[in-house]
Image 1 (cartoon, one colour):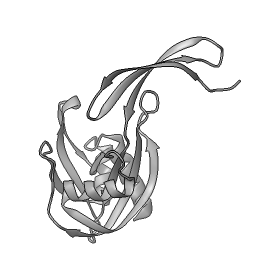
Image 2: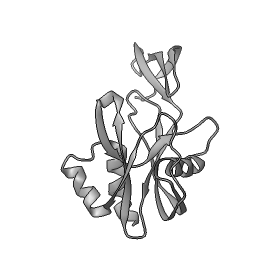
Image 3: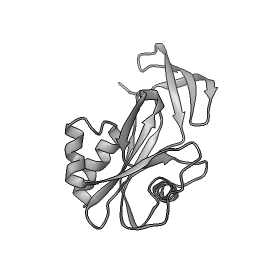
Image 4: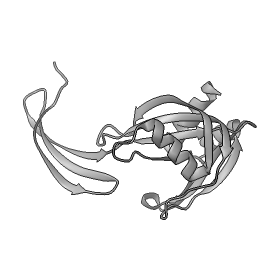
Length: 176
């Protein structure tokens, strides 16, 4: 049996600044018709910045959908036409004020493929120099430093909860 679903029709329900929402009508492998809700996203980057002292820079910020302040690795959405390599440098500088001489892609992943087409590129950054934070006008973050091993322990204590940060920190251990 082929596992492909053929799109019959597609309708955009919402066009937003961060995401679009569309509903597709698809033909399933067994010939039946089903509906698929799809969140369209331009893609994003996230970065594990590690200082020369082996500390990871994390950002603490309020996340409205959760109604909670959480601790994360720096991250952000790709602008139209922007390459991930450009975006990671921009986001690192904006959120932490750091410029890195050594940035490497660890891996790329789909954040939630059951309903969203977002691809997330996870990087590690080292050999950094402070240049000054350049936050967007609607962005409020506090930069915090933790030894990488401590940050990983914070995952298991429930202090770091989002999947990009968990994946990035656990993977950084392999690259560091």
